[in-house]
Length: 220
Image (cartoon, rainbow, N blue to C red):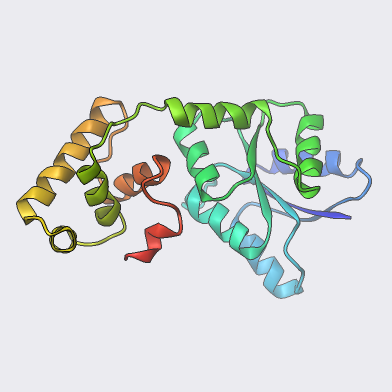
């Protein structure tokens, strides 16, 4: 029996998925709620094992990020499928980078969503059109063409280190490190991917493979 959790802050979406899953043999909806916190609370109170597959909305209305939601669920022991309108490519790539196994569009027929759940539960790769489009988009996604030094500075700075520490670690002047970060920001603006804050720089670093989700906590 495949144990499935549905996390979406739109009740109508959840109810539709619940009804569809009920028609599938060997599929059991063990949880349906609007946030990852609710799901974890349910797990703690019930003592239930992690769901085999979690169908997760890309953007929840509780202020959480897709990275923290996906990462939390993956670390908890579930495979995560993103169920999204797929109109936010950067967030989709962020979800995949955080460990989601794939994406299914909310515009897809319900049978495709169910097939995706079955495939993931069976350990099969989820190479559907939406997943392929996200990956292709990542490769083609306006490369900022950072230099080796700029990538090194960004990798350290985006993890939370003060710029002075970044400069010391790389053996460069503080002014050089600052100039590198300024150039990084300008380059991202030039390709339509602005990164005005440190959090934005972290996201860009993850999107471009400069940092992995594990790295971003490692140097903090």
